[in-house]
Image (cartoon, rainbow, N blue to C red; front, side):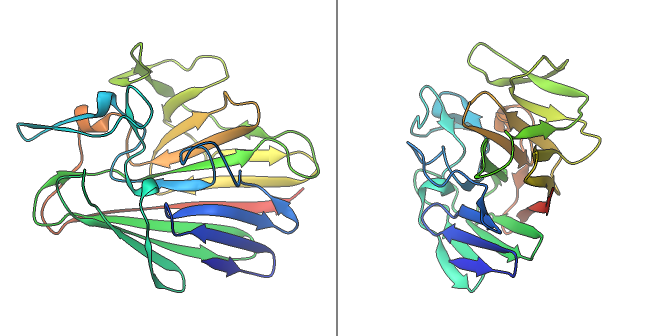
Length: 256
């Protein structure tokens, strides 16, 4: 699927439902390839975000297990591994299938203008209650074809504390020095990525949890999500049969 405006082109890959490329003028801002499905583009994290510890879900008195896609954890849900069906010129849908035991489905709708790209997602429960999350995991290039190295700017009140396996415990902690691989809360403004001399891009969302990942040398990630990683074991958002969770992410830019 390709969306075009006078100033940008967005390419959506139905395999994984990801934003595979975002050309702003003549500048590609996304990583367009990677060694595994969680390392490139901007992919949806559904029905959970981040680490599901040890691939195990305890819910409503039962235990379910999932493939450890990033051992020892199951990372970033399942829909980035699935084929999404195009339902119209700017929308996709995928069913939540095995090994997800609860059924349901997810949709995404995309909108591109000269200065923004928006993706809106919904996750719908089937005929069983189920926990649910939504998020996106964009991989932005550190270096564009012109301009200086990317800088990320944001302010937050705290991060989620993690255990030795980087799994959030539910407790909040002070913000350590960069580089980061953490879930931040209490942001006072939308995060901004600037490539001096080239482009400034702002990431906004209807959600208020943000995983900021600045450890890689070649890329950085600014990930809005509906809750922290491991939310299923902290305070899960539960959908009743027929209910839906909805959220959006918008990328807005200007040349600098």
